[in-house]
Amino acid sequence: MNFTYFMSHLQSKIQLQEKWQIEIKSRTQIVEIKRGSLLLYPNEACRHVYFVCSGFFRVFSIDVDIEETIDFAATDDFITCIDFFFNQKRGNQGIICEKDGVLIKLNINDIWALQDLSTDFLRLCNLILQEHLTLYYSEKGLFRKANATQKYLYLSRRYPGISNIVNHKHIASYLGVTAPTLSNLLKSLLRKTN
Image (cartoon, rainbow, N blue to C red; front, side, top):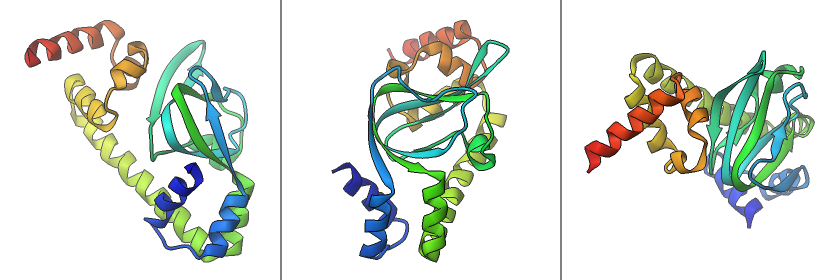
């Protein structure tokens, strides 16, 4: 079921011949993961990209014992520590499961091998990367101009229920505000809806 779901997601981007679908299946793993488990530890080389079939995940960095939230991923997202994935160096980033989930795991060597097999895979990787970059620059523009409330509202539309899944200090970190500021913001939004 999970691989079929993953393939239909890929097929929505580019039609892959059956032999290439079989090749992808042979090079992927289905991973079930529990809340609180780490997919990637800080100071570990990032060798995988994950497709989220279900669950919720958070990318974070640790600098001088201060943890900052960098990104989130939910169903239909791809997740990795992109800086350290492409340069294959150890980094200060990690990935943690915030809600039990199922992922499709792809190793960087398998991705390169697939790209060598067919230009379809190269086109597919480029399409996924373009999609990711487009979203990144759209969010960057929004976050540059928006106030904390607008940022939070965007985040809660993108990830419905996030405030019930992720500790508020991690959401505050992502938004670039303090936890008390986020708490006041949430109280204000709650008063407006009542």
